[in-house]
Length: 130
Image (cartoon, rainbow, N blue to C red; front, side):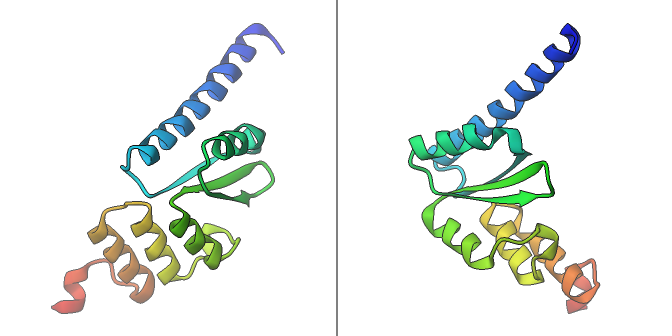
């Protein structure tokens, strides 16, 4: 590997872990109860060691062969994710998708519209009421 490729790889690795550490900061400051961090599997050992050291509950789900979804945060939120099961996000039911979005802190109205669209094929809440 040449020097410029090594520098790019190191920058990418450092950036990914900076985002992960920022997610931990947001959880510890009470800004978020649940975090979903998607990353390359090469970070698995560093991520699990950090979460264990900080005593933060987590679950890891594989995403294909090279990536992982790391759910971490409040124990009750992790229990909900655990009850949903280890499946791809695209395989979540409409209700599971809605619950996950709300737990991750996504905009409630947008989550309602997403749910309605997924459930009924309608893109606007007004179409249901009107």
